[in-house]
Amino acid sequence: MTEEPIKEILGTPKPPKPVTMEKSPNSEVMVTTVPLVSEIQLTAATGGAELSCYRCIIPFAVVVFIAGTVVTAVAYSFNSHGSIISIFGLVVLSLGLFLLASSALCWKVRQRSKKVKRRESQTALVANQRSLFA
Image (cartoon, rainbow, N blue to C red):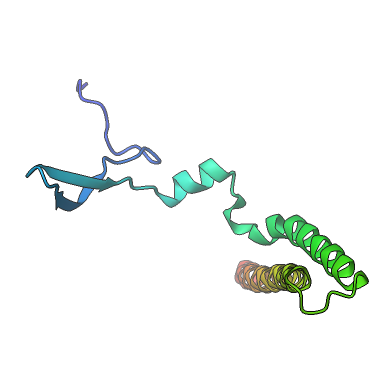
């Protein structure tokens, strides 16, 4: 048995590589390093939530949409058309609508990709079943 630890364990961070070297005014060389993060580490850190962005956006979109509606309603109730508060309310309202639409679009794309994967899996199972009984 060797005394050296195994360095290539799955999911362990690798040492950072130097990216750039800069000279400071004192003639000292500064090395900037960037830590390497693997996809496995990202999934472990986020609990697999990196693919569920649309689920996180929905609550924020609803809150922003409601805030935009309230600010716009208050601004227009005081007949302040074209004022800063009414423009701000319209911007927040449109931002909320944009977030809701992008969340719905992401959800639709994700559902479509799930359907394609399910169809491919089912095709493979049916083909495997036919080869077993043939």
